[in-house]
Image 1 (tube, rainbow, N blue to C red):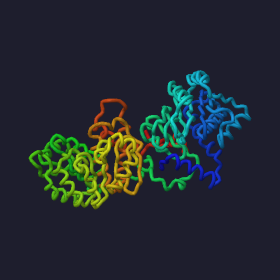
Image 2: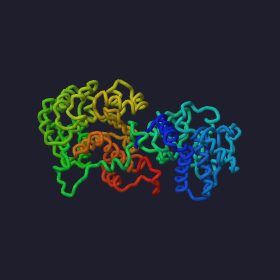
Image 3: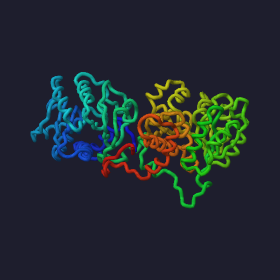
Image 4: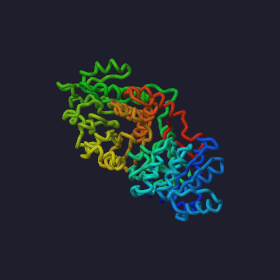
Length: 526
């Protein structure tokens, strides 16, 4: 599913009207219907609804929603921040219609109107936020600021239309003040700002409402949202005549003294993600400790230096084992010093199988990430924001404020697939394509979580998936496992592994349509 910025969405709207003769008023009616379908499935007839309509087409959507809800038995209080006659275009058509049928429309144009507005919010079952849409490009001040404060101050659940009012649709920035929604229905395609923080903190649960804009209008857009259906259909099959040698062999190069746990988690993840065989190549001195924790994993003791760090001379053993494997993950628990850097340089040059780099491997590469350009297969790198900041000489805050571009630019620069971890994980390719992962929860914010993701990516590649698709599927399922962990404190990385089976089963069984409505779909399954 494509993810659009404001300009691309407006272009698609404009093409529908001007090139394909689809009236804008029909698009607006369709948008209103999607919201009404959600509300009527959520609340019984007779429920009280406050609709807040602002300027522009988003406000026009609000006018449609109020009219349609009133016709099907809901008690609707419609408020507009625009004076009579101020609407333009399709929104004006709807305002004139309401005037012709004497529909009660209350004006919220003066500070003195706020008290009555607040009282009605208190008594409502839901508030529809149609104040500002995706075109907002200025900070919210004055009366609009007070209106948003009133909306957020109550306990009434909020449904935002297209995007929570006050969120920049391109960057996710809060434009001074923003509505904090319980749900957001975004139309036609998700908008970038819904998945970039701090905007993503305001959206609540996100649904996409179909308003009849065809996919061919946006086929050139390069950012996509990972969906339940795409991931489910992309996973490799497991035929009934499968055996361990037909399901992929994964080689993990990991571990050092004091960091064997990271290697254990990566290896166990590769197994539980479906690899038939997993080899764990680690410094000889830590292998015995890992073997007690990993009964099903085959250990490969590697020569080491006095300090328990893998000797670069171990490259011959690693390459021989790689010839019997299908993918290799390198980095969990590795030392970040010069010896590891020397080993990685040789490994990139000589590995006959795809490579996934994380943690200690990224730290050891440092400013030498260009070495990845010489790999035989396009590598995958999985930095968290702090690691990415060190690799490109910026701060973590700078990385976080520009996640999409950071991932895309460096994927091209290093000729690799970049998995920029964190909410919401971005998977970028050297060709300029990017995918946003909508799954995940705070349960993933724990030591070892990244090692689990690394093992899963390598396992999917070993099972035959293309590296970019393997990275996307692993990010989605890793996040889904986190979503299935009960909310609250007290969870560890092993709890993510324990949810792998549930995540695979949930992916297979769960549908994302909203209560059977094929025009409304959840962005995330949990």
